[in-house]
Image (cartoon, rainbow, N blue to C red):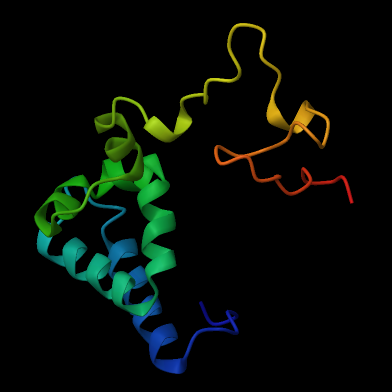
Length: 125
């Protein structure tokens, strides 16, 4: 954390303290939930991107799962498993029954529902 230029001195100090708290839990057979939760809270408070990147790490989520649940957090992979599928990931249906896409039409046929001409397709300037 000391070499990160975009952190404030206070943020750097909190991040280092949080990492020290979490590091102290690594050698134990069982994680102390209160100490680990305090470390995660300090990490979130110092810089949210640090906590987000750790929540993406499966090993971190496995090791500190009890502390994360105590804080009401979950790992990114666990959250993605809850979503069956994304509507945004479904393909948009294209032209049907032999119709051509409007970008492939000649300029005179490129009109909207009111008959007004459409702007030229992207990349055709």
